[in-house]
Image (cartoon, rainbow, N blue to C red; front, top):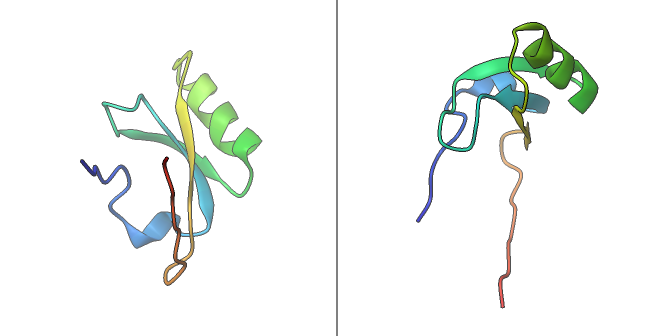
Length: 65
């Protein structure tokens, strides 16, 4: 199963904080994880979910054994 957490090119190459893995409301973003986290914390979100949105055209390969 695949879920798109960030559906916007606006955040390519940035760190993004969302409310949770099940609620992908973006509550902070920045060039560093600290920037995204601090923006989320200032909005009162205690445990945001942080992720990195790669630049367009970057391929990620995941292997699970």
